[in-house]
Amino acid sequence: EVQLVESGGGLVKTGGSLRLACAASGFIFRSFAIIWVRQAPGKGLEWVSSISSTSIHIYYADSVKGRFTVSRDDANNSVYLQLDSLTVEDTAIYYCVRGPSVMDPFDYWGQGTLVTVSS
Amino acid sequence: SFVLTQPPSVSVAPGKTAKIPCEENTIGSKSVHWYQQKPGQAPVLVVYEDSARPSGVPERFSGSNSGNTATLTISRVEAGDEADYHCQVWDRGSDHWVFGGGTRLTVL
Image (tube, rainbow over all chains, first blue to last red; front, side, top):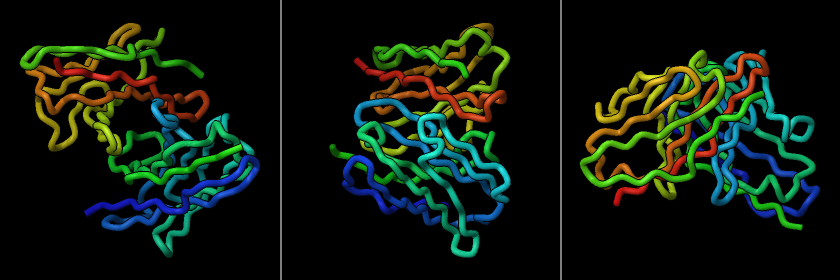
């Protein structure tokens, strides 16, 4: 069974940092892209970042570029999202998502981890 | 980049057909995917590449795409279809994913 489990969310002050982790299981991790999608309270979905299976292709939304960094550790079937210089606008549930490639639709989603940024 | 426009809400009676549009000037030339998100849950892919259905998704869910509108159609709507529906497109020009604002489907 494919599973994606996010962790690392929490409450942080404006300007602070968090590191989110996504632990994957149930599939050949190194063969898939991993994407981060967030959803602010009561709002729609917003794509945040994608990392390809080989880490060659890494993309960021304009709203987080220069502040967030994505990486993957294939030995541990994990993906990380480093969140720096956080603002209240970054408050959201962050979902870890699987895709056959960075440009294919998302076939499995984690349950998300909540990041709350307070001023 | 471009913007995908969805109506905030659509209402439909049980047993009827719901149509949820996703609009963009040249969306007919793009590949559109649709996600269903029930309250408190993560989204689930229900239609991909305009009209294909993942395994396990009922045939009542279908999609179309032409001109400036992509449409998710849900036939014989059931109470369990009440959810938010999000359209999505890959922007080749910027290597970014774009989501529509989402549509809340209410079953009357």
